[in-house]
Length: 410
Image 1 (cartoon, one colour):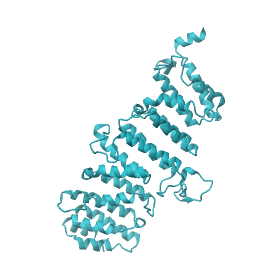
Image 2 (tube, one colour):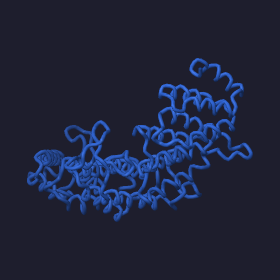
Image 3 (cartoon, helix red, strand yellow):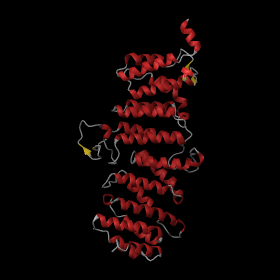
Image 4 (cartoon, one colour):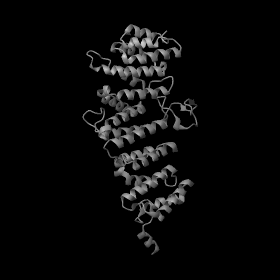
């Protein structure tokens, strides 16, 4: 009946002809029925939500709250999104206390202790939550939810979804100002961007020093038996994110924070990041993620400013004093760029766009990192790395300035 009367029910809804009793009856028509029937009912309720009174929306919200996460389907999440959006419009109604009930339920559903029947529903729910939170009607509670995310970060729980939410809120705040301005109660849970940076780094250390006890994810999203399988694919307590995904979420948020907040990375912070990202990881893939992040931070126009004070320390005291012979290809890519960058800042390199010197010109024989580069070229265990080091040495020789060429001839 509901399927055949879909348009009629939508018309009645638009004319306020659907009350609380009728809404309960329509909802009840899906209980215990086949998934195809549930889909029809929930899609109807979702379409009706835009024209319903707050009282009817409140009834539907009350009917959804007892559902177990394992009972949720995509249509349930679509309906919850519609309810969350339209309920948030009720802030101006006196005595209405359910304005953010839908938003609160969405937040609960993306926490670590929730298990959907299909893992993909987690990312969909998180996406819907962020979209709802970014609406003008939810502006006054954004700071509170930022505080909830910070609390999760301190407790090392529900970290990936919390970082996604914080990223969206930082980007929304910086949209007009180009930079995030902490203070004035805009972001609860932290005093300033420096405290937030310390907090994320501390959580990153916790991630890299805490074993995962979850199953191993297979390429198709199932589970594989534990044993000699890839530890990068171990799933965390959330049951959704692998260890590598946990790492990527933290590195992406660090990049966002360096881009949008006026903060500089300190020597102590870069030392901790270096140990955590390149020495603690158990796999080469995790270490390469770390090398790539450092290179990105130095290369990016929006992140370089934050890394500028520690760039030379990173190269001379960390890269050059590390495991030179065991350098990976990604590690050498960072070494090569850092050597160019540090020597350019020292005035030993000069950018050029002329003739065969296009790219850069070497203006000094006293390049920082030259002994280590030679060591990599002759002693690297990885043949590809040794070859790249030889090519780089040749590039440096070919890029000598005219004055240095004369000195070589002498």
